[in-house]
Image (cartoon, rainbow, N blue to C red; front, side, top):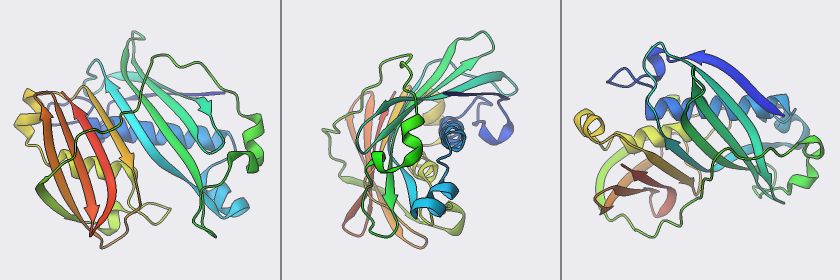
Amino acid sequence: MKHIKHQKVSSSISDADANLSVIGVFQVVQDAVTELLDKLQMSNPAMRKQYNAVWLFTRNRAKLFNPLEWGDEFTVTAFVSSITHATLIIDVAIKNADDVLCAYSRVETCVLSLSTMRILRLQTIDAIAAVTVEKSEIDVTFTKFDCSPTKQVDTVRVGSTNIDMSQHTNNVEYVRFILNAYTVKELHDRPIREIEIRYISQSYENDVLTVYKQSCDADKDVFLLKSDDKDVVKCEVLF
């Protein structure tokens, strides 16, 4: 099954240059993934009711190819590209009105039991049996993060508006925390062409996150977000 929707670049997902922002891409991807899961009868409300469990994003790598301007129409297509015993991989393609690929994301998800706080085997979820796997449109490989950030660049307190229905910090909010380490001019002068974020552990309201950054080479920065001594998120940004 493929979930397809049509929309326009609105002001809420635009950046300072009036283009679809990096945050906007992650918002569009999040909506597409959750809407696909809903169509597959595996939304988080349904998972809570039937299994006392929720979906977690564990990794997301997005490639940015062509800009979309404010008001541009685009099509979003989300589909399952791989299933393992513990993970569901969902690809999301964003194309402009001419069917040209503008962004592509691969999201790795898993199911967390709220009773045991352990990852469930997907084969225990009844609806998984009906899921069809579609061929990926492009190759996307998750990184190994071979660079360790050491320079502290920010601290962020998780607020109430950063929290989602799973009562933890929403995955898109981490991208916002990371990109706020750059100025508007830096993001304008060096457009991001690829970004991967790995969700290592969860954070909650009132947690204080320390943001560390390391410029690994001229075209790559790596970030680490920690809560006390706990690694929460690691992120690679390519220019």
